[in-house]
Amino acid sequence: MVLGWRRRRTGHGATKKQPRDLDMEALIPNHFLCPISLDLMKDPVTLSSGITYDRQSIDTWLEAGNFTCPVTNQVLRNFDQIPNHSLRRMIQDWCTQNKHYGIERVPTPRIPVLPMEVSEILFSIGASARRLDQHGCLECVHKIKKWGAESERNKRCILENGTASVLAAAFDSFATDCIKRNATASLHGMVWFLKMSDDLSVKQNAILALKELLACHDRNKHVDALAEIGGVNEVLFDFIREKISPTITKASLRVVFYLISSSSSSSSSSSSKSSEKIKSAFLEMGLVSILLEILVDSERGMCERALGVLDSLCDFQEGREKAYANALTIPVLVKKIFRVSEMATEYSISAIWKLCKCASTQEERVLVEALQVGTFQKLLLVLQVRCGDENTKEKTTELLKLLNPYRAGLECIESVDFKNIRRSF
Image (cartoon, rainbow, N blue to C red):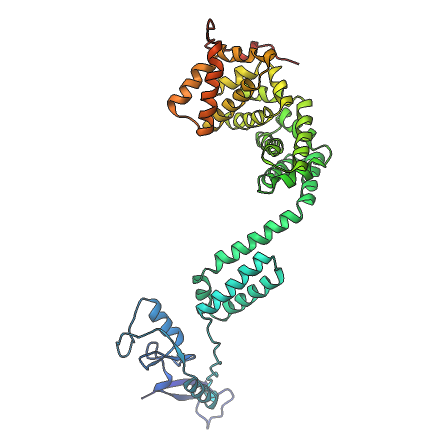
């Protein structure tokens, strides 16, 4: 059986003696045609059943969930596709012999990539990423890109073998290394924008970027670098005090929280000294008073961040002394229990616990003041409703023990007017 490849030629400039139209036809041998598509095969492959198909057609058949040979209907023993080079060369020779009919020669197909090859190259990418070998990683990526450009089948094979996740992990490794190596330059740039730019959006983007940078796992290293940059403490303090934008104020509070709390979790003497330096600078500028004013009349998100900073300041003797000296400290902290969020409640209880536990004989008035504003009742409620984590519950229990001896003869003040409390200077 043969099928025809027909080409109609129109003779331009034909004479009267010549026919105007001429039908020309090339007969295609049956064994050159794919049994599925009935088209001339470009990449013939033979299945375990012994029948040859065009690779693209049989791929479509198998991907549709079929497990049989389309011609014989036999169940395939395996899905191996063996290139039929002899038949492909015969088809190419036939195309060459019939090129005068307008038939183009079938190009020699590229061998499709195998899942095993993709897995091997992905393993190499992972190894290069762990060594931070950019050159080796790029070579592998270029090879994958080349495979994908060769055929849609290769693209599917590459995607189905987890290439996306491996490349994402490699990118993350190199990006993290880049941030570590360029952190100091980035910090200087961010602080410069905070100090020098008059554009509020630029300041906001810079402080948000600084917050994200300090939130990473290598925070202590960044704190050391930031401590060496002049004027950063003053800029952050002004952002918190002036409240030029809620977003900027919240981000500034979070940055200050990272700077102050880093020393308590670091075993590095250099990081501890840097944080001590930063903490002392903020305390001298009056940060405790500013935080308490924020807590009096700010929205919940702002209050939670301010409580976190205040709690961190109470880790230090100098910070507790500033808190003892301000009449708003205990009333505000007690007021915020159950009023903002669970995290805010934990911060409030933690700060009160630090102030009461570390109070000297002269500062025992803080225990009496805590009782007068209803601390004991709220702490009992914390235990009853099971609010907070185990650490918070332990602090609550210890606080109740500290306050209990001072309860005799003291009455709880149900409500406190913060605006009429005289503020310390």
